[in-house]
Length: 226
Image 1 (tube, rainbow, N blue to C red):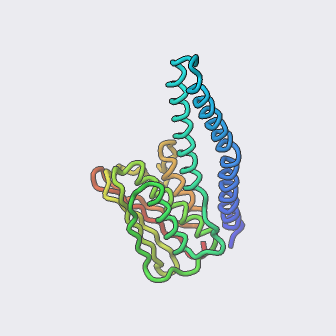
Image 2: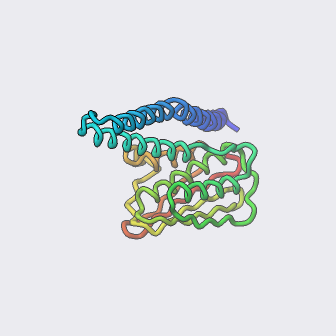
Image 3: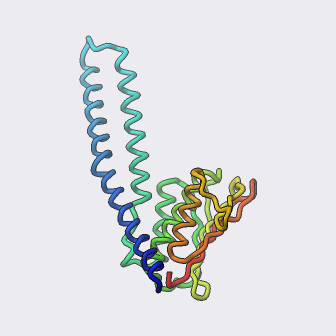
């Protein structure tokens, strides 16, 4: 294995570790502060309700502030739940994929039709991380952009390569080029770029097949040796 490949593998693992630290920092910092502020405002609203001389115009403003804080907390908790990854090292790829599908259904209310073709071979840690994040982004894109609440996920081994396919029957779009001199670097394509880079770090490839009104199919192929 070349020094470049080793560096790419280390980068993938380090990036995942940094992401998990960020998730914990958000949980232990801003989430706790928002919860404390919500508690204080709720207490203030209760005290004002017990006072006959309290300014009547303050109550609606307090209620709106409390509602916004509750909405923000729910959004952040959902985000943390989505990005809090499983323990990759001790778990098989099939189990990781199954758990992510269930998590997606729980968080979004959508449905995931999952097919794992035969037992998947043992995959290196870096490959498991890459496929997990690619699947997560593909499912997230369906939830946010496809206009449908159902996805089909298929995982299988093909020779010395692991294959993952995520499809929907949603509104579709015109995908930008992901490779070559015209490969997209635009900000609005950050999710597609992220999948592309995750695959590239383990010598894999991403293909996005979509047309307006015809749904979307994302396929990742990654060599077993990463």
